[in-house]
Length: 291
Image 1 (cartoon, rainbow, N blue to C red):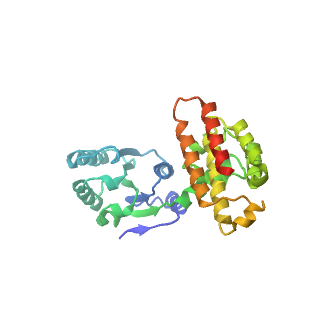
Image 2: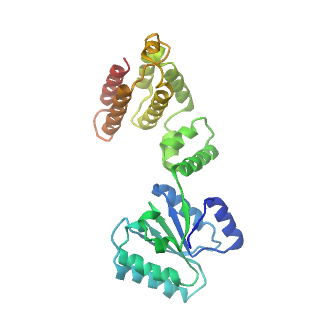
Image 3: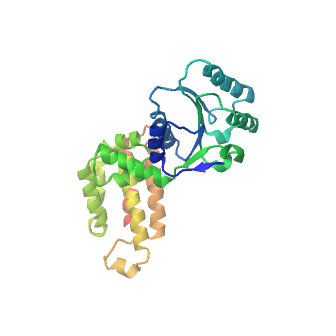
């Protein structure tokens, strides 16, 4: 019967102590980079480096014959040496039913010292008989964000790490982008956004000064996140208050236009067009929306 465990860290710590490892583990998440991190953490529990056999069903449709040839390598290697062997199967939901049926028989009688580590976008896409033989870990978006924030806090403690964890999907991607932006610039940006009714010109001038091709993505992601939160927090206010200047009037029509404008600008950065011209056009369009 399948066993669903929620605490991955506790599971790994326990394995390190007991050395009792399930023969089949299924990791489920929609974030492939995040799953790669979990795989690396699992491999760290072995005191001696295990042999690793790997296949990713996202790359191609492995035939039943080819799959069995890979498995036979496991059985053959089991005859020599006591080192652990890991058969890593990524995106198993894409495997052909004939491959899965063959794999099911292997799970019923696995090779000596062999452990199967499977990953999938969704356990619902895998035949239940395989799922039932696995210890399963589900990693949702909140798990990913919380773990990324912890890593960022260890790397560099800033009040913006929670925002970075919402924007980026992995640590390397986040740190690379963060290096292109300063906390002082983010402090200034936050102040301008919170007083947009009185500082629209200063806000646009600031963007013109600080935006580069390298940091535009992170700046714009933070700005759009602020606009979305502002829209949700103030959607119940009326237009009379907005006209008095008590708060920035951000209706659903403006929100859609802002999203479209930001998306268009970010897409344009993938071209070889002149960045300053791209930026000027973006700021003109944004000014028209905010007016």
